[in-house]
Image (cartoon, rainbow, N blue to C red; front, top):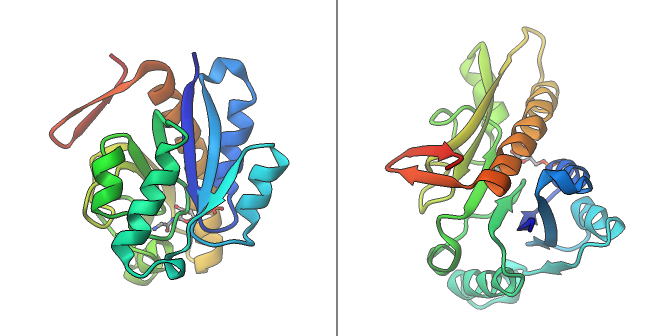
Length: 202
Ligand code: GAR
C-alpha cells in the first residue's frame, strides 16, 4: 500500500510538482492525497488541481490567533490521514498543536545546508556570507526554525557571478532530486530517529 502524503505549499510548487510526477509511478510507493496552502491563488494549488489532487487553504488572517490557525491547519491535515506531511516551500512555522498532532512525520525542505542559514532567506544569506558551497536540507520538523533532525542534504557550488535567483534555481534543481529520493525511501522503507540521527530504512 502506498504511503499517504499531504503536501503544504505557499508558492510556485516546483517541489510539489516533482512529488506529483514521482507519485505517478506506482513503484514510487507514495501518493499525494491532499495539498494545503496558507494562501489562495498560488501556482502550487493550480498544479495540485491539474493533477486532480484535493486542495485546502487555511489562511492565518482568517483566525483570531496564530494558535487557532495552527490548530485549524492541524485538523485539515489530519482529515487526510497522512503517513508523511511534506512542507514544500511552506513559508509559515507550524506550532504546538500541529506538532502535537503530526510531529515526527513532518518533513520540511530548506534551501541551505543546515545548520547554516536557517530562516526565510537561505540562498540570499549564503550568497551574502560568501560561502563557496551551499545546498538544501530535508529535516524532520521540530519547534525550532529549521533546526530539526536531518534526513538528507545535497550540496551545490556557489559561482562567482551568481545572483540570489541563479543560486536559488541551482539549489532547487538539487532540492527536487533530494526530496524525491528521500521521501520515496521514507515511504517505501520507513525511517527511525535516534536523537538527532535519522536512519532511512528498517
Ligand atoms: C524551495 O527552495 C524551498 O526550499 C524554499 O522555498 C522554495 C519553494 O519553491 N523554502 C523555504 O525557504 C522555507 N524556509 P517551490 O514553491 O517552487 O517548491
